[in-house]
Length: 329
Image 1 (tube, rainbow, N blue to C red):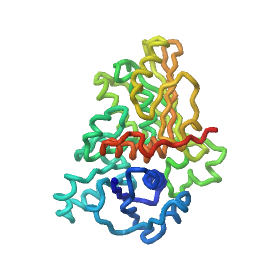
Image 2 (cartoon, rainbow, N blue to C red; image 1 turned 180 degrees about the vertical axis):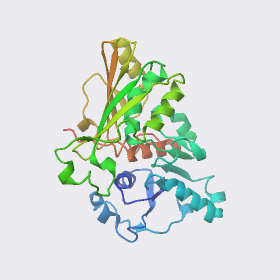
Image 3 (cartoon, rainbow, N blue to C red; image 1 turned 180 degrees about the horizontal axis):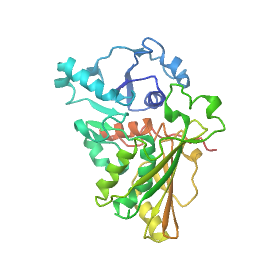
Image 4 (tube, rainbow, N blue to C red; image 1 turned 135 degrees about the horizontal axis):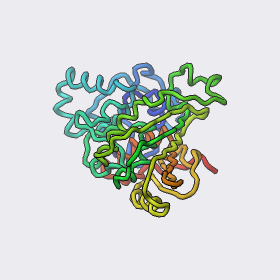
């Protein structure tokens, strides 16, 4: 069994990760760390786990007792954690990097610094298999890249890319804010971080890796939706391919992907919410290609993809522990 440790265990992402690992046939949880909830039952914080686990949060842990460590704290905290471990626990430095696998769910190492590999399996599955440290992609970044990877890999991005994408309230984290509480969010839609969202950095790096000559803008308008979970990204750009060539390009690119499927049928969030699936629907309109991409922001956009990466790192079937039912009827 793979023994897993989780640091930063109180948020939505960690809650989904715990749910997946509790039910994973080849993994077990060694500890769940939370400074704010130390000693409390995990199920008291993540109510959906009532009856599934009697784990309690801890404030101290032994990294030598786990095979994989998931970092689920806020952005910026993973670098701080690594600095503290390497400076104040020198014995850890010599003993653990050789054996311990790390999956970081924050954005700290998505630039592949400090030996991390960018963890988008549809982009570089083989590198993830060999990696000791993986930087999990962002939720918007996952949905948008999956819409564009086949075009970029074929070096067919010739023009600016335009994206409008809407996400559920869980994307903002568990801590309540002015734009996440029920009275404001319900029956409401709004734009935020137009053209400046932090996920543009990792999207740009991927596109230029696949198509070095691509130097056009990715114009991204993120939106807050009045629902809890899921992302729908609407992406369009110029494309020289005909309709059948376009569909074949996407079908071929994702033919061996474990969870991503290209489809000609209209897609919607209920097809993917509560699963690790991604559905992409490419279509041609005149000289434009329009791709709709849908994922669950907490699963394929975060914890599900983290477990998928763990499976790859340990030589397991990518789908192990991730055969989940969508919320659609």
